[in-house]
Amino acid sequence: MNILLIGSGGREHALAWKIAQSPLLTKLFIAPGNGGTGKLGEHVVLDVEDHAAVVSFCQLMAIDLVIIGPEAPLVAGLADDLQKSGIKVFGPSAAAAQLEGSKQYTKALCDRKNIPTAAYGHFTNATDARAYIEAQGAPIVIKADGLAAGKGVTVAMNLEDSLTAIDECFDGAFGDAGAEVVVEEFLSGEEASMFFLCDGTTALPFGTAQDHKRVGDGDTGPNTGGMGAYSPAPVLTNALQDRVMQDIVMPTLKGMAEAGTPFSGVLYAGLMIDDDRPKLIEYNVRFGDPECQVLMMRLESDLVPILLASAEGDLSDQAAEWSNDFALTVVMATDGYPGPYEKGSVIKGLDGISDKMIQTFHAGTEVQNGATHAIGGRVLCVTSKGKTAGEAQRNAYATVNQIDWPDGFWRTDIGHRAVEREA
Image (cartoon, rainbow, N blue to C red; front, side):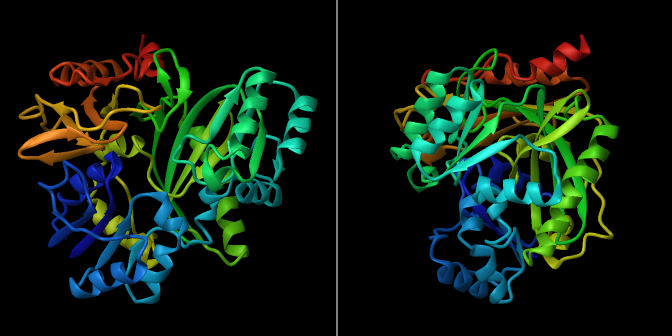
């Protein structure tokens, strides 16, 4: 099979690494890829906003399957245009991708299908939003309604911060994504994620994970796109996973089908667990980043036939086999992230540190004259397996310490909840 993978992040490097292991693969094209993916496939220059150009490339290169990594092309309808041209694609339609593209869309679905989630208000102006917050009090959660690259959420512990977050949204801090705002009840408990591959009517459970959104140790500082993750998520027991499937995921698929927008692709459920009761925080419609990295490390099945079955609309004969090992990834980021940062610093010490238990997935990197340069905020994802959470954590940080990058930083406590559980 000829496969086109779209994206440039750590998630896409992990997907490319797993796809490259498939005996079904003939050739892998990656658009645009990053400094780590060139050894796994051929980089191609494609403007993914030009859907006609992507279709033409797929026809020219006889692409059998397109895998869309990021959310923005999905919300923009790239999957629709590929499918109209007879090209198989893993990922939802633009209408179905509104599960991530609009917080209000998902909340309305939860209302219709009685899916447990936080109480909320939806607003199109700052005056009404501020009045709602003043009536509800803090802590409270403010979310830009649209896509904000994982940075449009503020968990405000006091009234002042919540009102500031409202003003930032409506003053354009997140562009069009903040033109509408959802204000949610603050949920207490432990956050975790569960993934499902869907074909429009059925869902195949596809692993659990927990990530670390805050930039600093001890879960402090502003939210980021993710500073690390681990899998599996110990808090999601088998019984809880069954409840998530029954109370959250299947009603979602049913509601989407009833609306004429069946969901196909990855359904990534962000959950809050409190007193053994799961509530939906939000949906994403693609693999998480950095959650994808730990899932791919643990997945023992061939990924390609599963993704193809989802694209063809029939997952009934598919199963996913998982390693019993624990996987953990530490994100190495450029100094200043998630605020302004400098680009172009050189990273050394990457050669010879990957093996079957350790992989360094690239995100914001490019190779210039044989040297690896940091060109993004989140730059490397050092990912390790271990028999325990503690072993995976030790292995990952031992590898981090081998990398020579004075302009980078990372959290030193990724996986602390899982390690504490073991202790």
